[in-house]
Length: 158
Length: 411
Ligand code: FES
Ligand SMILES: [Fe+2]
Image (cartoon, rainbow over all chains, first blue to last red; front, side, top):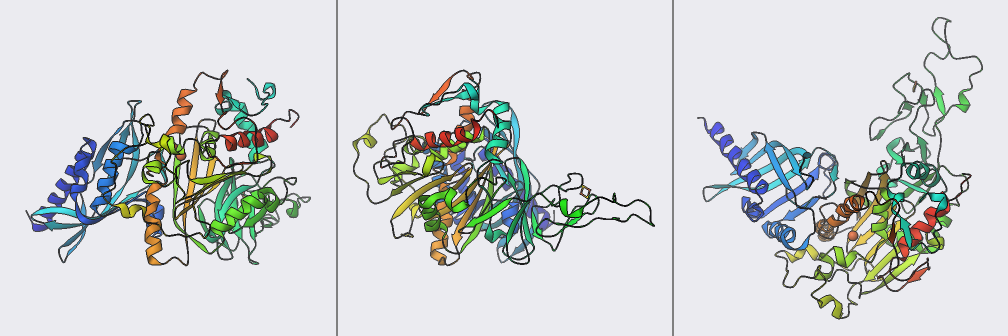
């Protein structure tokens, strides 16, 4: 396997683990995919294309991601539901100076109490990833949703 | 219960049928949205230059908002005067002329029909009817007025000028929040699984804030025991609820175990989320304002948003919201605004429940067309103001305004 193919395979595995952690409801594991000072943002294509700084969720650092998880466990009120992430194999856009830039398309189905999975969101991850202690971690994950509209509410990370 | 049988008395009971009835919905589009009301269309900063346009909507009617060569903002129905095609298909852009792609009729930036393709036919054959008068076939225009960078339009010739429609109290708050050069930090849409009025009621409902959302009371952003109040414009049409932080008194009720929203020992790992600066001299830390029928200006700490709710049928609605910042913000202030934006919107710590509750009420009232909701908190009827936010008076005020436009059986 070439070095590039090996890297792609590792990133692909990272994305699958990430998606499964959320889809299986292991939300406490979600911040662990990030570096302590990482950026996580959910935005839309319209906003991303115009470099709009605000997000639907904006976590500057892992502590804010942990707060998202504790809020969804203890504070916020919502109808129980879960996601199913389908994530494309990643495309590595740049790998230099220890930081890997990559993107991957995704579709997330959401199953609410009606019991019917519905497409909640499609979009792409725009990522910066670094290797720390032999593990790949996100230093930045921008979730760019294709649509402008969030249906009803969003409490679980994408 | 039909609309014309309804005797609202003091607006303390509302028939559930009004949230799902197809005829009520059709009538609202005519009597409320196309009626004697000003509809929010756009922010002036979305169309800063001559020729800039964007598409908007008044109820279900597609609208174009465009700045002409003289700098004036015009609004026209986005419907070609020929055979009804959408003139602007894209969401926004810049143009010298508005051109319908179907048969290439063109309009100037005030909606006047400027040219017709093959008007005189081809080689002397065809061409428009001899008596066709271009000047009477422009795009249908709306009355347009602006206030602190907000563009409003109406189809009504009767509705008073915007400044009178808003009234002095409402104008004062809009000016307080938006009376400086603002810019857009983000724009999002929120799909709601219920009738538009369920969300409007929620915006005007000060009673639920600390009960449904536990972030408010836990972190001291807003408790009903803070100093604050409710103001209504004349007739109850618009509302403003506000609170002033740092005035909170210990309130025994909030320690009561039976209030689900209050959780002990809940602390943030990243409390900087709630870092604020005193942006307003008056000390107001929360101001939620609704402008009849479907527009809202909101200040939650340093997060400034404007929101427009579009009806999409009796059972659906879409909220469009713009997050704003002041052009003069320092980098530090901007960071605080963006962090605090985590509080609001469909994923907002203190707001995500609002979208959900619209759908829950829609499902809850299924089959209850002959029953009523109760709006008796804070008494009955529509007073002009209250210094207690433990009150549903602004919701009653909305219904009074709504009924005023809907009730005439001859209309
Ligand atoms: S419909 Fe517009 S030119 Fe014919
Ligand atoms: Fe709310």
